[in-house]
Amino acid sequence: MAFELSEDQLKTAENELKKYLPMSQQVYGFLVIRNRVRSDPVRVLVDRWPQFRVIMCKPHGEQKSDLFKDTLLFATDAAVLEEILSKSSVFDWSKYFCVGTSVSHTEIFKAVASAKGVPCKRVAKCYLMTLEDVSRLPPVDSSGISVSSLDESHIGLVSQTWKFGKDDVAVGLIRNMIANFPSCCVLDAEGKPVSWILTYASGAIGMLYTLPEHRGKGYAKILVSSLAKRNHALGYPVYSFIEEENAVSYRLFTNLGFTEDPSYREAWFRVNEFQIFQ
Image 1 (cartoon, rainbow, N blue to C red):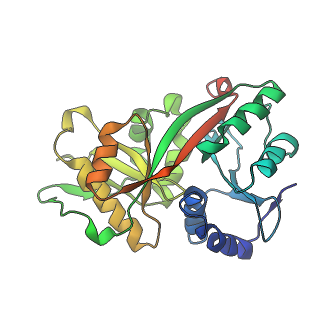
Image 2: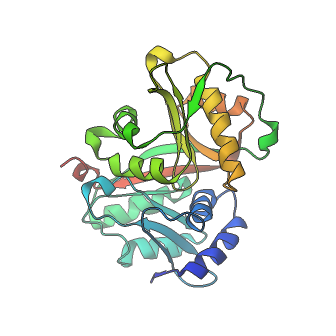
């Protein structure tokens, strides 16, 4: 029903996914980085090769801190996707897992979960915001501001302030992001981060956060612009997912030249969510 791709096949899959942008953006972005950077182990599975209809990037879940490492999924055939979700051993529906995929697959996830008698919840619905031309970023004045990268000593701070990072279960995800992918932060006079943004394993930039007492100083604009330029220089796609209700971030990214594809939304589904904090 599904088999794992080899290193050489991953490069071919990257090129194939490029044909389906923007719908394939998250899985494509993951393979762009995966083919260049070795971070946490992830299995990339397809329904068939080389003309795959479903492709999944599934992280290894060996401990509780791995729970926030989502499976990323792209499908061109809804019937094949439903069959894989229903009948294959790729997903263990008796345990917790989270999947990021097109919002168009909502009814499939709900139907399979219902048939299996397990809870399935859509926890986020996001705009896909991409920056096509980094050279057109508006000028940003960062004079007098100390901009750096996050390091391992900042993992706890980022985890505590992330809306999904309760009880330190997101520490493994954030440690991997800081260790392997670009990040930017603004440091105060004592060298402590007061505002920051990270890159996910999929290449999406996010976890943008500024401590409340430091808001209104333009730090978010500086960090998004800095990280966009850094990721572009590395050959990574420059994009972000903005939750539909987050008007502030939507306005920020739009003002920086990011554009939304009105025909596409990304969603995240959690199965057996109650198991996360047990």
